[in-house]
Image (cartoon, rainbow, N blue to C red; front, side, top):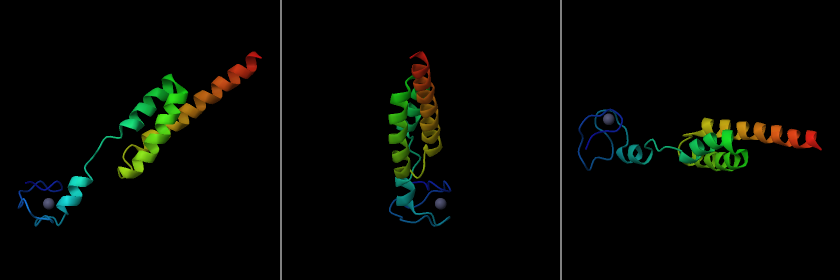
Length: 96
Ligand SMILES: [Zn+2]
């Protein structure tokens, strides 16, 4: 197999890369996994604020499991959704 950190060929059973010292098992489990929830939440925050807010909050929680992956995007989704909800609520109140 090849080291995920430096890309050099290492023994398949090696736990640590002999070239850079990077743990091979850790490198495999901490691979860049896309935070789909954060992306969905961000997109929906523009279309359906409620759905966007829920997905963004879930995405924000998920980010903790993914080494902070998508945390910024989830945060942006929460803020945008909250702003949209605020605008909708103000618009509804203004119509009364
Ligand atoms: Zn390496």
